[in-house]
Image (cartoon, rainbow, N blue to C red; front, side, top):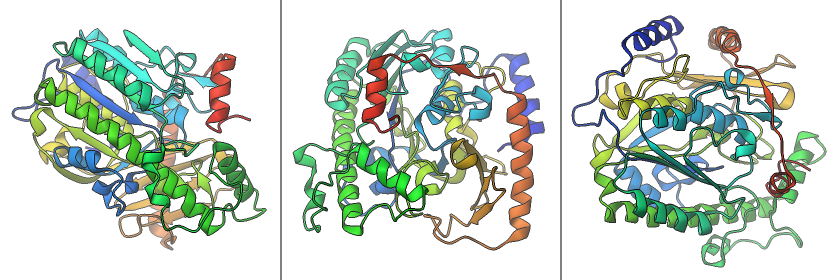
Length: 447
């Protein structure tokens, strides 16, 4: 199933000729029905209880996971918002959709999930937290209604999303709910700061805002010092976990509303993140590398009525979300889509190889391949490569010395890079107003 390019081309040609999606699992929808996507920026998979975290930060997400297909090893295609979100919503790799840097805009030639579903008769709405996920960067493509809350978070987004659900519960719709609440600055409400209890106080003046965390990241990248003292790191993690708990509380409220409206029986509910967050596992913080701490993301897919709930252990990619939802909706797959439907895996019929790719323009340019429990990270500038056995070493703390395996993965990575580059849609520059720039500064993205 996974990334066999000859097979991919054949399947794509058949889809174009037939104009229809594949067979559906018994009982699953193959027609328009409600779809709700929770898109939580910077939510690290292993900081959720359903992925093994010990702090009680995510009871509502964990309950959702119990009724969902939970993908154990889902990988984002980039370590930062703009390209990762573009890949999630287009089903394309960054080199193809062209949104490689913070200066790029999603090209009109890229068909988004919203555009494909709107063409299929869907009502489409997005309630987003802005920043890179804004109309300035092309993320409004295909949405009938696109509301930018400019960093206000779920405290304002949540009630508006609930009101929209009440008004449109009888429709076939796509509702995208996006938030930066778990992104820096880590500043949860007082009711979600209990994880600070018992910790050593932070250094005077340290409060983990975006500016301080970015300064720590830059210092580590420059090799001038370790980014944070241990007690400051634990302080930052406790605040981050408080933000997750706050988001979880809103997930619970919205899911309860879905139940009250009967949408839990009709809707597909997805919870996903664009990337994770580093807490000094590799000497730095925030998210600009390709280690699993950042590229592994939570992916839950609750099918109508909680059908087919369970765990998929094979490697999947964020770009697979779009084709999966289109197939569930009975919609055509746009030509050239690079993700693959996850329904064969849900049915237990997926065929290897199961693999993921990603890339970044940071640190001289990096890319990765994850396959067979291993991940190879390759630096284009230095030609250095790191090999990890993430299935045994989930945080990738110890590199593996296996030159044969590394070379085999490198060959696949080279082949992938050539193919996605040949499919490139080109790059467009993004115009940004002062309000957008100010929000990006508050998130630590621009100086």
